[in-house]
Amino acid sequence: MASGFGTPDDPEAIVGRLRAFFASVLPEIDLEPDQDYFALGLVNSLLALELVTRVEKEFGIEVDVEDLDLDNFRTMDRIAAFVRGKLAAAR
Image (cartoon, rainbow, N blue to C red; front, top):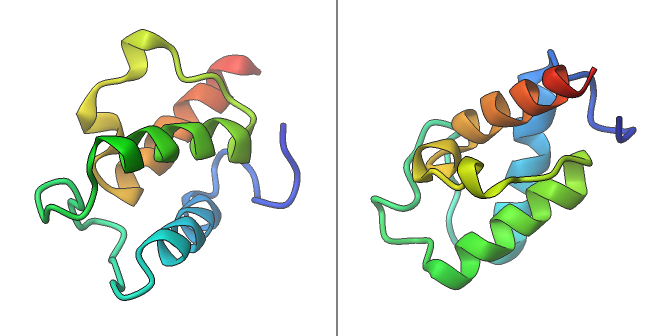
């Protein structure tokens, strides 16, 4: 497990890391954890790929092809749930 982001059971810490990512790529937007940035038109395909890559590196998980469901990445809350599930499955 990667260190510094809390435990898999700590979605707030995961969301905090995701907030930092979005602040770096969308500095003019203050997103809430449950906001759908795809529906808001804030994330294009290139940024989506960067998001998936960041999630893999940041949390030490592998996003498999079958995981590439938009619903897993639509909001920071959903990503946190996805990450928690992947980390729990790896235990």
